[in-house]
Length: 177
Image 1 (cartoon, one colour):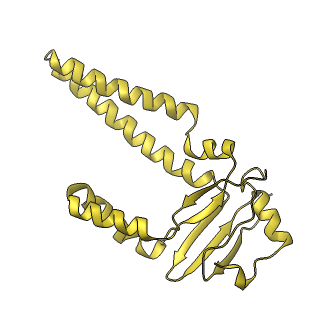
Image 2: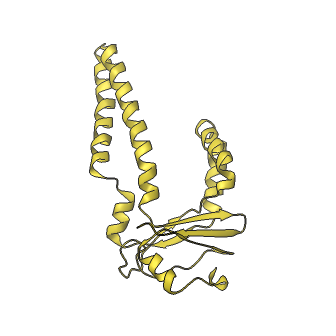
Image 3: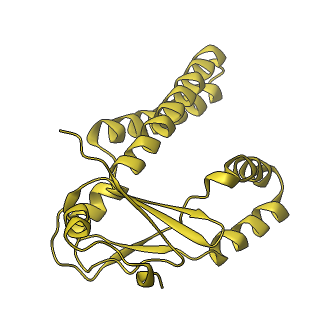
């Protein structure tokens, strides 16, 4: 049975309860999450692409990212590992990626340009697969998503212990920091 997410807005970042949002264990550790801003998605994507080519843009973008407030999401150690470390299949593909890059340059030094080209193509294919697989992994591992719209923050809670908590204790407008 799919349950509807709990969605609410606050004027500031919300102080979440001190238990893991994934498994419910009491924890004092948190991770910092930058709230997504859907209204600036295209501009941020263009700036990211420009920052790869020009160092000053990269520096300005880094300062902007560091100056934006981060939301603190409580996670226990095991759930934190599940969030940051991908599944074993992805590890195998990353290992293949490294082997293909090594094989490309090792074979290229011996003038096997066809083998070098093939290895570079396979490395690029693995890199694209890793990037495409890691985005849903990053989104699906946390049951809470935070969006920023100007000065307001919108929380969407999709399940887990945090969902049960907010069903029992609905957020109030003064809870925003």
